[in-house]
Length: 170
Image 1 (cartoon, rainbow, N blue to C red):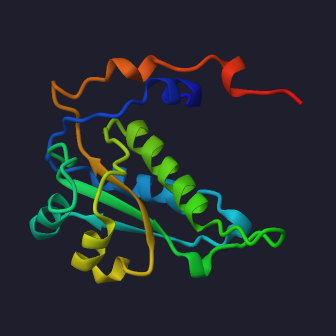
Image 2: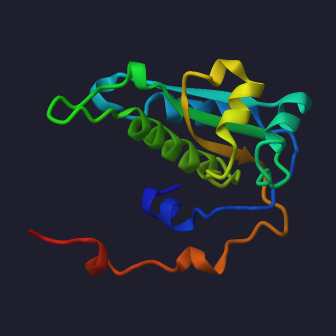
């Protein structure tokens, strides 16, 4: 799919099937994340694939926004591994994790699958269930699946500010 078409067409899908996903599609989604640009190429992120029924039940205990998906990707950034801007000490772990998450979100749509960026979750509870996440700032959960008939775009999807409202030429 052409990139501009992809970014115009992509929407937050909130009704997903838990049907098995093609391994090749998941591999391409992970590859999109793997090659995402990060500050000084430090790659201070981790992705956890949540697939087992037990792990999915734990996700459901941390958020109400699972949307029927059978697979979830959780993305986190690790501050200790990130580039730090020397002028002001700004740590880029969250920025890098968000870049990776954006690549994931677009790759999911490009595969004909659907998702939404879930930021409304109890990160500390999730870390308690999955101790391997403890050292990471968790930025997103992506429930992944095929859209169901209810998985249509929100009317808010096309509501965007005009370019003159978001860009200032200096």
